Length: 128
Image (tube, rainbow, N blue to C red; front, side, top):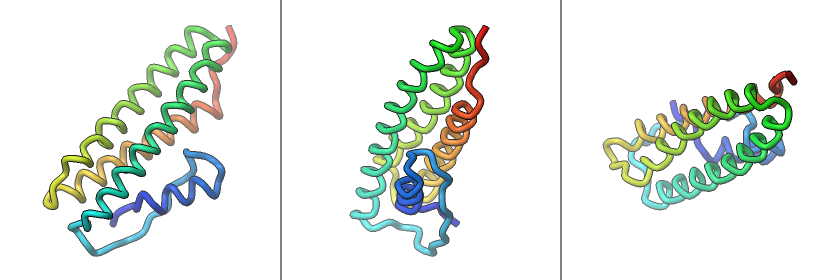
């Protein structure tokens, strides 16, 4: 079972946020067509760029609320984003044999970042 990035991005656009819940679909192919791989990589890069922008904006807000708590929150978010970025970068070098595993690793890291980001947004650091 694979979460298609296109479905996740569509769900995000419909929800008005880059961090909406992902949609899961099942496919039976294991070797992506070159255009599918290229499209997936481009969407992953775009998603990572958008996350970085939102993360930077969120960081500025949390620092105002509480410097120490904001720094701790941002450290956690940056670590989670970095993991998603590393996994996203691996998509470009994935072979037919490693594509499913690489894409799944990126999707897992992306979900983990999304969950961490959403939790941070709903529970901002307390003011000192």
